[in-house]
Amino acid sequence: MVELILSLVTGIVIGIVFSFFKLPLPAPPVLAGVAGVVGIYLGGQIFIFLARYFSSVGGG
Image 1 (cartoon, rainbow, N blue to C red):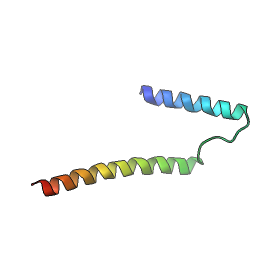
Image 2 (cartoon, rainbow, N blue to C red):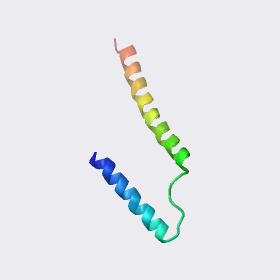
Image 3 (spheres, rainbow, N blue to C red):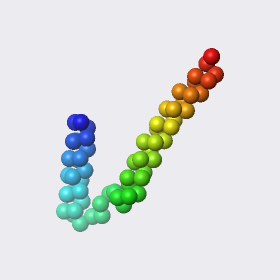
């Protein structure tokens, strides 16, 4: 929970700083960003599943 709060606060601070200096925000478009995060998470979960599956198939 602490990591979530720190990430949110850091993102807010970065957003404020970039907006203050009138710079483009260093983030992808919302839908693309969410899709990227979901894809990374699913890829990690698929890898864990496949690693467990293939280690149990040949292991005897």
